[in-house]
Image (tube, rainbow, N blue to C red; front, side, top):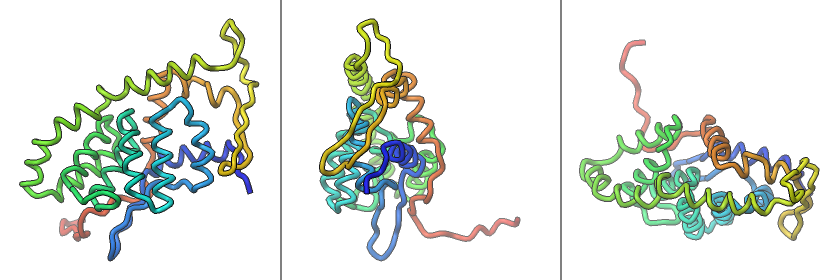
Length: 242
């Protein structure tokens, strides 16, 4: 049964709000995001012209299929476009060694980059990871972190996404004078997506084409509460009096 695209679009918002459901068991595993396969397939159409989202969704698709090495590669490509969810996913994968060699220094650096916009959830996870690092690992963070930030921090990566947004906006179908009344209908099809579609404003509205509004929308979705926290150590009772 196909899912209307507007439902998948709402699911995209939830994917930001509930960034990760990290589970630690006998064999630690990370469950990234809350989207299902058919929702990801539909959202890939909305990701047109947004390479950060495009590679993130491809990464989630590989992750759901159990191909975490490929997922990590896609998340890294998304990270080059200032994609905070993908940077966050990479931090979890390196922390647990899922799909990549376990490297908690690398995990913390990814978490630090993911938290650079100051979202409380990201900062909380970053600080939990820091508390679990050894002194030697913290020293490595300082040694290795600067080069990572020069490659993946917003100051160096947002521009790539903004250029893609500009190219995408210029392809909008409307009048030659630039008018669009939002009645443009866009259909999605194919063996994976099922039926569905969107209107012109969903595809080409300010939240999808204006760089300032786009980043504001991304940050709003990042600010939602996490469904579960990253487990980075045993729970200890608080001996302080209530």
